[in-house]
Length: 65
Image 1 (tube, rainbow, N blue to C red):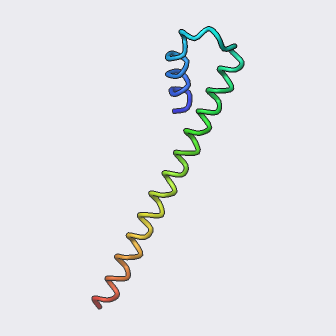
Image 2: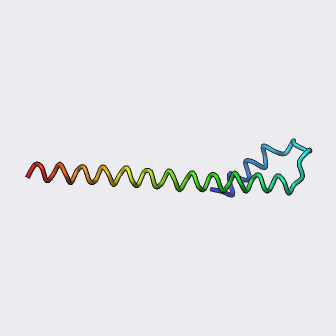
């Protein structure tokens, strides 16, 4: 996933000549890290949401007993 996003960014950035390759790579690395962090945060939010749904189902099942 990270490799594909880096390839896309490299393709979109071909026309720019003013930045050195090193600066480009640093920028791509920062973007890749941000994508990974965002993925982790989204995964944790989804996990927490499903956990709450499960707790609610168990709670209502106990109320119905």
